[in-house]
Length: 316
Image (cartoon, rainbow, N blue to C red; front, side, top):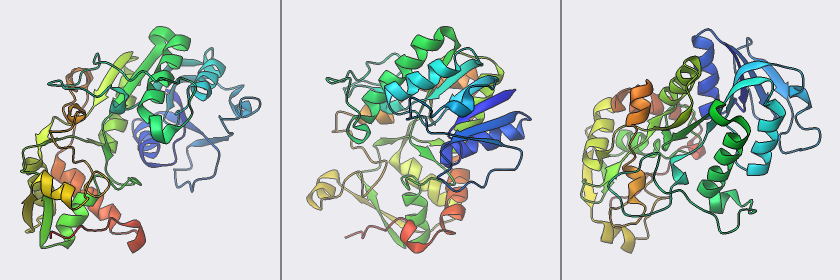
């Protein structure tokens, strides 16, 4: 296939490009050219700024592609403009969304049909405050333009090498560097993620099958006890896990930013960590072992400067 990637130089986009090339497809990326690019020479690099609704997509006016993967769409008006510009020259449009599109609530599991966020102000462009709600509107823009030729992939928190968010990375770093690691809660709270490489391979697989629809990508929910022990196994870490009650964490002012991935069952958005990805598994999603993700993530992270690596949290 001939594939167009809107984005492609960082983390998820980069892994999608590499997965496509590995499977023998030709790839063009469309970026502003502001991020360092170490992609293979076989990639065709197109330049532009999709937020410029007048001339920003000039480089896309003449090409034709079997499919487009949009990894950089956050604002509905920008996504609509890109989708409409490419409508007659792209066979399928795959939009990378997020599991954060769902309205908070108490439910046993989150499926692709669970209630979505509905923004009170659909014209807002505050991505930081309304990331999930804006992704909902972006999905709708793509569906309106492409109909059955639209595919939406809703990834969970993405892990693996090149992860600039450092969320999953915090835990392999802690277990490798500390003899005692503060472990949140009592070990029974649920946690999920998706390796960026598994997400990338699944996206390419969907396009090869010309598959439409909406798909979650996430490993099956596991307990924090299983998660941290799985990370430790991958690293052969002997660190002691010091389980710390949620009330104590709160009294110390420790939350999501300090202990990433941890959402106590007492919060109303705990369903984020009980996402059902059975539809994607049936369509071909394959997830590598946690130990492999932890090992490879740490091997990448330790190559970074110290100020770019996660800061450990004292046990007491």
